[in-house]
Image (tube, rainbow, N blue to C red; front, top):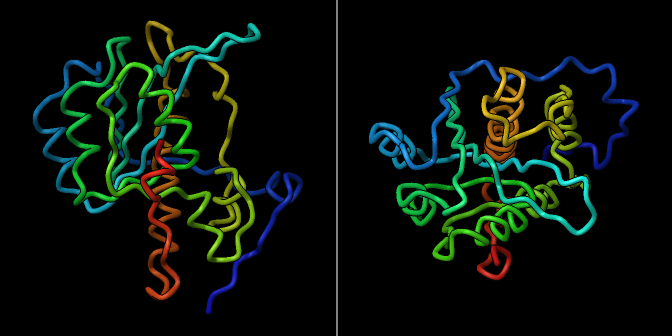
Length: 208
């Protein structure tokens, strides 16, 4: 049985080479999604997902989700979300049980998305914070889990940037794409281990 480090410090990660997403990044408005994008997503076996929200620096204030990222092996699709909620095509994708959707802190993402998309009912979701535990990994952050598995450092320099900006710059797009692609890569690395070690699909209660 392969054993991974259970924990890792920020000091250990500091000198790791920086991780990078080298695939193609596509940026769309949520309500203007080409058919080829929907078809591409729906034929995948595994898709990584994440969201970004403009930080609120006022106590008690919460902003709505600004961006959703869906990553395949060599492509990442970034969708700028509207206040009206997710487009029907994205709602349909998340209800497609034939595609595994992998995320981290998924419960929080779904809670925020439901604030504007009442019909949002994801199917076949893997929550990495639960999934990695069966492999002896105790860390909860993407940065540390990725570092343990791949010996690379994910930069978080864009995390508190303005995700509602009129134009997302190249650094923001790379950051967003990497986060979604990284959770997919983590899942694929671990799921390649013997099936007896794989038990972590989220239960319905964990997505609500």
